[in-house]
Image (cartoon, rainbow, N blue to C red; front, side, top):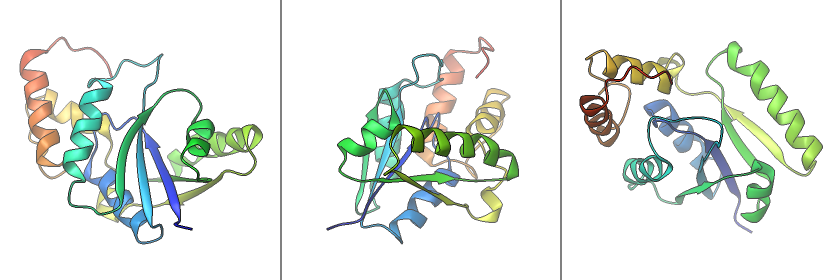
Length: 167
């Protein structure tokens, strides 16, 4: 039986930190499903389709990575993928409290689901999608933080929409 893990997130947008977690996951699992969530109560900068497309381009050279999207409960999606493993990245202690709440809730919903935490390389520990958006919105370059497809999309998005909406 192949070992399959689901790495869920909003990926708005995907960063090199996310890609680092995907690569680390591939060292442990035979297949990693990068699952882009559609949050009905959040207003992301990029549409679900745009986020999926950027991730597909950014992971095209990584074997055994599938990029997918879902809405609804993560535990139901994980079960539908015939696995019981969720991968989550932890950058800092500040991430832990939220992640712990999610793990405990997921266990209450389906106690056969396990969550594995992976830490990115140290130089990605401060990196977040929100910071990258702020840099590009303010006229900076993000090539050290995101794949080229993402940086291009950010520059296109902000050259059209400088409305200053919050993320």
